[in-house]
Length: 218
Image 1 (cartoon, rainbow, N blue to C red):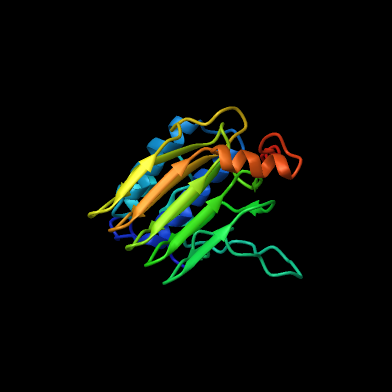
Image 2 (image 1 turned 90 degrees about the horizontal axis):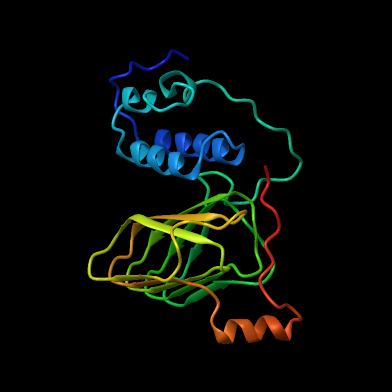
């Protein structure tokens, strides 16, 4: 396949692929969180291949159209491991919740619609140092509960008549992941918080003093 000209306009597919490359660079320790944040911002603002080629990654005007080896696997890859296939929690007209011990993939999509979404991360195993969270609030309520050292960045999140209530830091502690939220709160309500008294009592009943954080993959 021939490489596109640098002036050709790009779309969400190309931006998502560059985001994935930057996440890998952070996981491998080749860039810092501050560098990642600046490059993600440049990626979201990019309009052409030439804009993406200014980023310190393999030139997208050639790399994004090249054939990539496909890993052989007998089991299908679960949702959440690619930007084009996020793990979706969609409330619809009701409610949806995820809690307990489970693997948190790097790509999520939370749809509040007319209901309630609750994402409880107190016992999860994060699979990446950066968790990309697409928010579509609608007219619903979205609550995200995270361990004390976790952080959230909402600079790319917009709202109409809704409200975002973020009670966590934007800088993660050592070994903890960063949630990067983008999309729109809409007419709904988004809350990001640490464990409250009720959450902690539930953990204590399960014999847990706190919320375990297995080491992130390198």
